[in-house]
Image 1: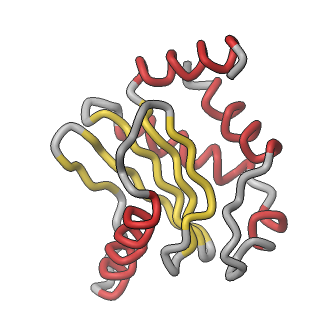
Image 2 (image 1 turned 60 degrees about the horizontal axis):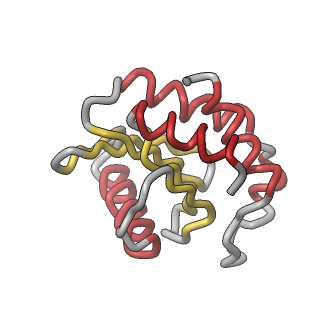
Length: 139
């Protein structure tokens, strides 16, 4: 990994950002980016996240965030996608949603939707760069 990317990743960890995921509403993990070592199974977490988002929707509610011990998960849905930001529990909630909204606003939706229902892990250099550009604003 280039030194510039490693330095930025270290800065993000120090800011409390742990992970970003994009999953399909069915639970398929389309994109995952860890900023610190994570032993969490992506498939299990994507399925669980989709299930609790669907459960909240079934109850006429919307899941915004969930905190487990020292980690918070922020959820934002758009179309058939669930965007998830994982942070330390001390991370500012407004800032977390601002990051998610910025990512959602800069996504090339036609490209992302082309992966819908295909069972393909979505990771392109362009999407990674989009995420990096959004995160740079928060360093």
